[in-house]
Amino acid sequence: MSQEKGIVGRFVGSMIRRSVRNRFHTVYYRTEGPSLTSPTILYANHNGWMDGYLLFHLVSKIGLRCLDWIEEFDAFPLFAAVGGMRFSKGNIGARAMTVRKTIRLMKEDGYSLILFPEGVMHRPPSILKFGKAIEVVAKHVPGVQLAPVAIRYQLSMHERPEAWIWVGKPDSFKSIDHCEDQLASQLACLDKAIETNAPFETLVEGTKDVNERWDMRRIPKK
Image (cartoon, rainbow, N blue to C red):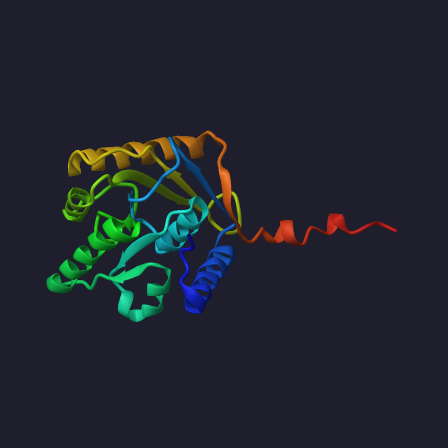
C-alpha cells in the first residue's frame, strides 16, 4: 500500500526522494524482530531536520502506510498527500482533533503512525521527556505495537553526511518511561554499531563524493 496518494502524493514523494539523494552520501537502515504490521507506532528521536524525510523512505521500504503529525504543516499542506497531519503548536483543540482522527484511521483504515514523542527537535545526544500522546494513542488502538526508531547523522568520512536508522523490536505499550528506555537503548546500540562499522542495508544511495564522481583514474590511458 503506497504512502503517496495520487498525483500530488507522487509529486511530494519525488521531492522528498530528490532532497535526500542530494543531501546525503548514503542512508542505511536495519530492522529487528518480525516484520512490522499495522497498526504500529514508530517512535523516534528527533535530532535532525530531515528526520521526517528519512522515515518516509523507511515506511515506504517496509510497506507501512503511516500518518505523521507535523507542527509546520500549514507551511506546506501538500504533505497531507504522503500522510502528514496538522499538529499546530499552541492549538490544543486542533491537536486533540488530530489525535482523535489518528486513532480512528488506525482502528478503521489500517494506518500506522510515525511519532516524535519528545515533541520538539533538539540537538543530540540526550533524549527529552516524552509527552503523553504516545500513551493516549497506544491505549485507544487495540492490538497496536510500538517500535523504537533510532536515527543518527554523521559528517566525517564523506563530503556529505551519512544517516543510519535502526528499528527496534516491536512491543506492546507498558508505560511512557518504558518507551523512553527502549529508545535510549536503541540509540546506544546504534551508536556502537556505527563505531564498529557493523553491517547495515542501504536505504538510499545519495550523492557520492566529488572524488568518487570524478575520479580521473578511470579515464583510459592512451
